Length: 209
Image (tube, rainbow, N blue to C red; front, side):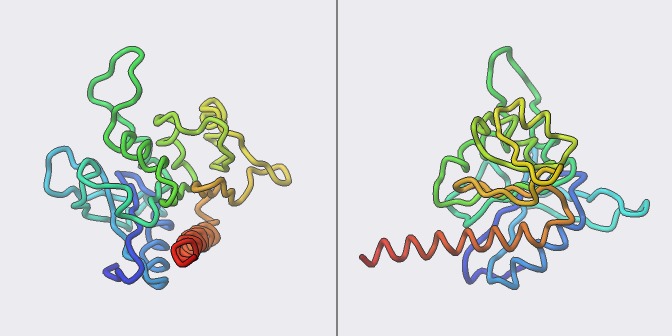
């Protein structure tokens, strides 16, 4: 996970993250030349150790996060990923709320800023769109997601793309890449890397004209 040749991919994470996606990110992205950096809200701590969802009754994956989401700039990354399972629901928690005020959870504020950066790819898989629902950035965006949050995503204004009585496997809408299910993580990662590198080639070509 120390490879840094092509830049960094930031992964937003919290307790109850998807273990298959976690293992896949740690293997695939460094093989492609990218450093994986896990990001969260650390509540004033220097680090926090998060645990995955259990597999066959056993919690198999753990990650110690030292990067505070309040302290980073989206443009320091080639892509920002919202990992699946319940982590993104936890990241949208606010300690204080006011009627009519947009969600101010640190990760929500960050993803709201990140999605406005055209050169930063936003990758979201499975339940990850929960965070973007809270950020109110899905109006008229074309997406896919886990079937059990379809109504949340549609209520946030997104257009779900369907294929053969399922939400689509993968949907690309400008800088947003979404995947339906952890079983599709390989296809999701390959698509995200292709989108990153297509963007890099386009930027390089524009600079050399």
